[in-house]
Image: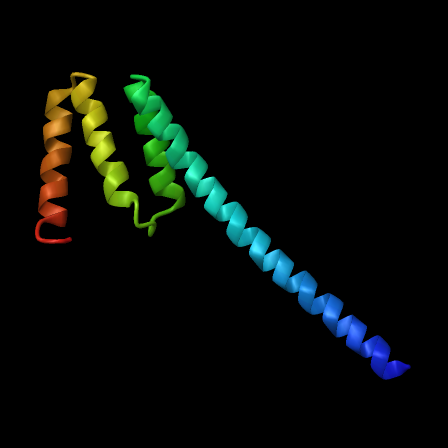
Length: 103
């Protein structure tokens, strides 16, 4: 009887840990998609300055995410489309300097 109870205890504990890890990973992925998704939504609807804020929020909370270069490029486009040309040119140049030669 003790072995059976121990088996159930280990089974439930392992399942709980796996569920918790999976839930955290899934919620992080959903949050990343929602942050970048909302920023893209603002961009598509012409709310460029608000989109900049959301792209920057995405970058801040996900500093190693593979979509960082795309988010930074969108920020530069937001400034261009918002007619802040000097800031846009500065950001485009920074991106060229940083990512030149990368694929």
